[in-house]
Image 1 (cartoon, rainbow, N blue to C red):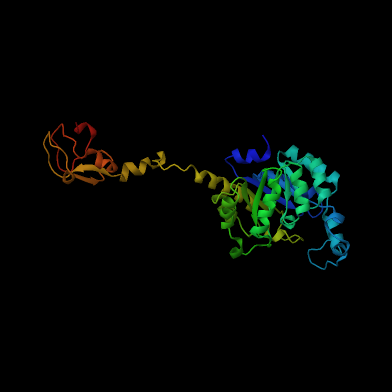
Image 2: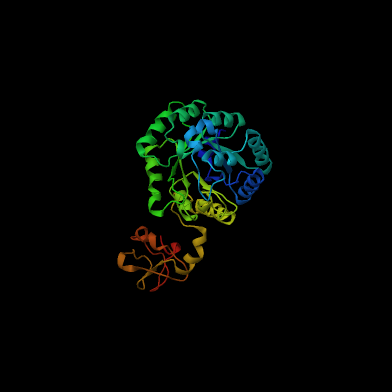
Length: 345
């Protein structure tokens, strides 16, 4: 069964630990984050694959990058420092397979897309930065490989264009509601976009990629129907790098997974019925039908003959009152006595 069909049939939300470039350019830190993600209960880890010459023009690469988060004098040097080689990715995939967790990456350009397909990842991520890159998106769609597409920095018109573009080739894709602010202000999150996407694109799955502080908003997204949750993972929020501040540390990420799994269990089924766990409360407080007066055998019960009380022994449930009006008594009964089925003809 392919990746998207697995998501559709699974009862569980698919949880992606976005490592991105929080590995600081160090493959051993990347492996440590993979292991942490697995231990926290994530289903997949995700990196970012870039061919710098394909993604950026020369002026962008040569731009001075004077920032406390910089790993180089220019933006190109900074990005190159954080970029893993193809051999590094193969090593990371081998390590993730050994640990027992899926691994993929965002394809930041066409060459990176081709490499990730060759790497045989379970799906390709299209990040928000490329949600309006129709050239890349169409090339990705043509491959028929499953896609997970973030929609940060886009409006609904553009998202609809992406939907139409990918749908020409297949429906094996997921839209993630996303706001590309790090961290995202609460008032900008607009979780109701999940409902908007569900109604606008009813034939695909919808998820949420969060950059807010904490975990509760992402758990709420699951309650709204998000089938995929993506959150950044870091070892230390105080490390150099702009993504660390809005990332979850291992304790938070484990809490996120636990709370999502609890939310899934709590959502249950759209069936309203008496639960076994309610029995103690029902035995103590559940209402029973009782007689309002002493009545003789052969009497046909009327509305004025019946009241509802907490009574011993438990008799006929209060909700059954309409069903016993007009029933004939088989025995004499006393005032305030519980009404039992064996009293009735």
